[in-house]
Amino acid sequence: KLAAQEAEALAEAEEDEEEEDDDELAHVPDVRDGGVIKFNFTPRIFPTPMRESKATEEEDWIAKNRNHLRQNPQLKPQLDALDIEDSDPTWLKGKGDDFYRARDYRAAVNAYTTALEIDPLLYSVLSNRGACYLQLGELVRCLEDSDLLLTKLDEWAMGPDANPDDPKMKKLRVKALARRGTARCQQGSYELALEDYKRAVIASPAYDETLIGDLKRVDALFRCSDLKRQADASFGQGELSAAVGLYTEALEIEPTFVSAISNRAACHLALGGLEDAVKDCTNALALLEVDPSALSAGTHSQSVYEGEHMLAQDKEQRFLGNTHGANFGEKADEPTPKPLVPSGPVPPPGSAKRRTWVLKTIARRGAAKAKLGDLASAAEDYRVAAALDPTDENLQRGG
Image 1 (cartoon, rainbow, N blue to C red):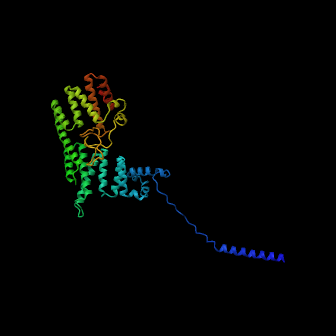
Image 2: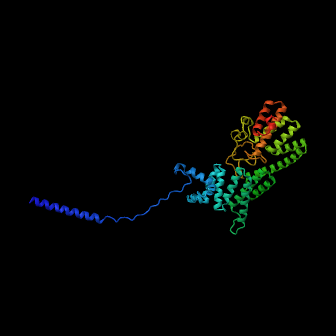
Image 3: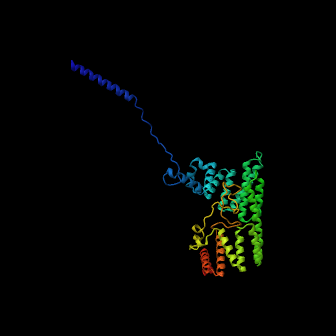
């Protein structure tokens, strides 16, 4: 009887297992169809893997070199596939503003230029690019952007929906006029610069003390330039005493007009006023921010004139002279005293013409010192001049 019960229980268990197997088979899904899954990766310009720590640095590099990268047919599709921000003119303006604040003016120009290619009606971007060109010393391009901005503002003012009292547009006009006037000052076109500043003062919606000061400054430079022109004519005719008097009169108006100082030194040297010649040459070199004693340590003209042998200079160039800490009619946060800087048309640092100015001034001072009997100091000046121009055989022989 016991064996019969065990056999019956075993049979029931087998039936239960079969039912469970049937239930499991009933819930098994059908076999899936085959297919291909595609993964899209973020496009990259660089061959290296993306790293979060390098993302900002790479983004800045692409913004700086975007125009050149687009000229490469292999890279253009990758640029086009990047994030939408790279084609957003507002985003590009923000990048340009960041570069400007960091004083990376060339990168700012690239960002602003790309933004203008997308939207040519971004007046503030055009204004900012002109400011970059001024900081870079590219005066012709600064003038072109200023002219273009003023033209666009005139066209806008003639439109049916224009608001003549729009403070933003008035501010842009004032900045464009003042910036163009500043660039013309650097070119020596003081009469045109004076006209621009007068228009800027008239266009200014409120009394601007800094802008008024700049206008007076340009007027002084204009009068100084006119006196220097007369002095140069007397110098050319051999009327040295008259020339000295006119140069001195000009320097009473503008003591840092460096070309007048240098030319007066030449007159003093020709007239035998050796100590006055040395003094004027030294003052001119100081305004050009050159340390001749440091220059004497150099051996090559390029390294002598540029780099570590140049005295530290304010990277924010004070184009109108030494009385203001702010540019373009903008007020400085705090009145900080600034070192004297040269006024008048001055070649940009690093240019061949600037090097020639320095060379002539140092050589002229060396000649005056030699005649005064200060031979050791004269020899040092001649060594500097010879390093600046190794091709001048006269300087290589010591004058």
